[in-house]
Amino acid sequence: MELLKPDQWVDKYADYLYNYTIVRVNDHIVAQDLISETFLAGLKSKNNFKGEASERTWLISILKRKIIDYYRKINSKKGKAEVHISYRDEDSEGDWLEENAADPYDRTAEDTMENKELGLAILECLDKLPEKQAAIFKMKTVENFDTEAICKEYDITPSNLWVIIHRARKSMVECLEKNWFN
Amino acid sequence: MKFFLKCDDAAHVCDKTQYKEAGLFDKLMLKIHLLMCKLCRGYAKRNTKLTKTIQSADIKTLCPEEKERLKTRLQDEIENGYNS
Image (cartoon, rainbow over the protein chains, first blue to last red):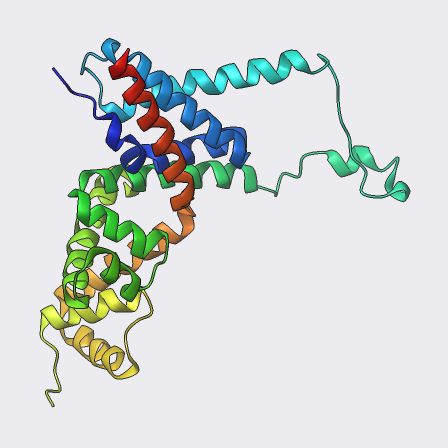
């Protein structure tokens, strides 16, 4: 019973895991390391995979533990109750109370969180498309490659590309309407 | 030169518009078609919404070199696993 396909993990799940991680650790290098560790841990314990969850869900469950471990590690290194306040310049010292109070109108953190959830929803829908369609749609729409470059990479004509894009867009709209918009 | 687009062509121009790759004339033809065709209006609306949604999600992807590095590491590990 070979349900896992580790050789496809990077192509299929790296971006998904990355988007999941980056909002939680907010550091590009750390996120990459955690993903790498997740894949290796997945490989090591692949016999534990029972096929009850999807491959992606299973990898996410490993990643979650890696993220928790990461925070445990940095917290044990740090002094327990250290608070760092950085002043932009000397003059503003003393203004910190007001300056650092949460601004109720600043919703960027929440917005970012919601955007990331949306990003994951989009990647999940992308995962449901046929592989080549998904790859081409992602290159064109998310990574903003131009038509010519994609045609060269996949050895297709521009009209092939637009047919693929059209099908992908239709499926993506349907999927997002079902899973996100309502 | 045909003046009115068929629905298939309209959809094609609409797709191109999402990537700012439609020409001015095509866009005008699309506008005219949309005035007359309810079905395509629906498609155009959903299509544009998809574009906006994806843009607002600001999805980050790993660059190809980073993916290649991950792959190599994983591949090494797979091979080691089989040898041992």
